[in-house]
Image 1 (cartoon, rainbow, N blue to C red):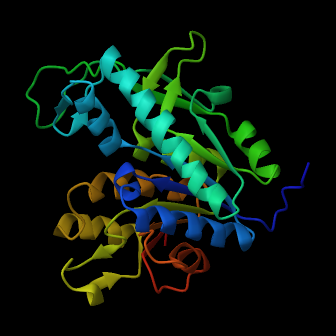
Image 2 (image 1 turned 60 degrees about the vertical axis):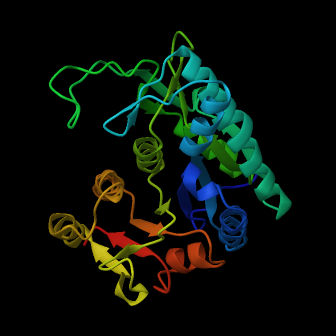
Length: 281
């Protein structure tokens, strides 16, 4: 078994299903991960697959059910989630990595109880009235098997994890939120870098003006940009979740796009040509 040397930093990468829709993006993910591996980084990927789930639901005659942007998952939906995320996205992403020489290990949260979860209790959510919403087969993460993840990366494998959770004792499977989960993985491993891949690829003061890209901000500045409306929409929960781990041993967070080869390594090295890096101070 290979030694996990202290000089080999750990990076946790969140890949959204929307980022994997185009060939250029898939090729970019593979090339960028290979850059990190070739430069001594230990890499762990966690991916979602929302668009792929929606497409497969439609093929099965199911209608995606979302309340205030949050997916409600019944048993039939969960079957489709497993098929799309594990059977399609997980295998395809691992294949893309293998094609460029990265030894990807395709798995999901139930594999070796990598991600343990409990059923999310009904709750009132903003934008959905005052009655508690039962999300069905959706779980809240309660544990990360960081010891198993460390053993996998010691073997020079790149875990590619599909976002499912498993109940510790019963083995019940849950659909889980990728943004929340990747933060917990980074926290459990005290990762040196958390990369959040998005189609936009950075924070901009004006999305129509590439020159307004924010190269680096600290936690206080990030909160101010949220208040000013510069960080908005779906980027807000991503940034807020990520900020929560900066004080827990995760040294750096970055938002980056996968399309440009070398972007991940550029952010990891702090060169500042791509993405937005978020630091504690």
